[in-house]
Image 1 (cartoon, rainbow, N blue to C red):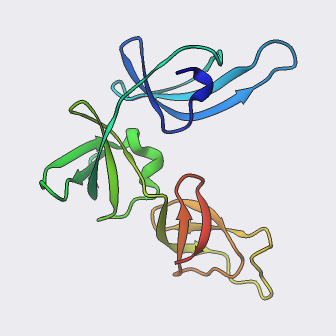
Image 2 (image 1 turned 135 degrees about the vertical axis):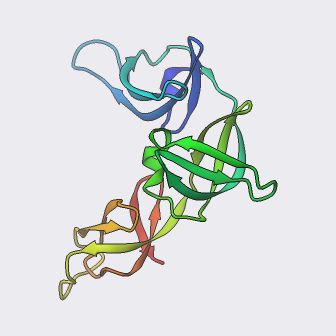
Length: 184
């Protein structure tokens, strides 16, 4: 595969390292060739780097297996998951799922990603329902079409919601974009 095909969430192998793409952007400077600006996470080392690649650079995609699992809890910088069929437990360092943890509640179902026998990450469902813990008071006449207001969810995630949403309400959030979908 070529670097231009990389999207957030994809995993590839390079120089014996297993690397997950956190962000991927095309960049066309005024002069010169197009570059891919990438934010990459080294799964084994736990480090994050910002780098650029030529769009035609060849990469080897990592072949991952996925299993359904339930999120149990977080303790001492580790998140714990359980396979609901075999009751086998898996642990992941919080740094490796920093973004995903903002959408996780206890007992939530996710897909655990394996590279061989190595647990390397999780895939969230496309939407999650979270409760608004803090937002500005309702503004009379607020509508869906207005710009919205920031709201803090029970996991610490901050998103924009319509003016009529109040603290204590459950809302559905798109996990890919981090945007409000509807009331839950």
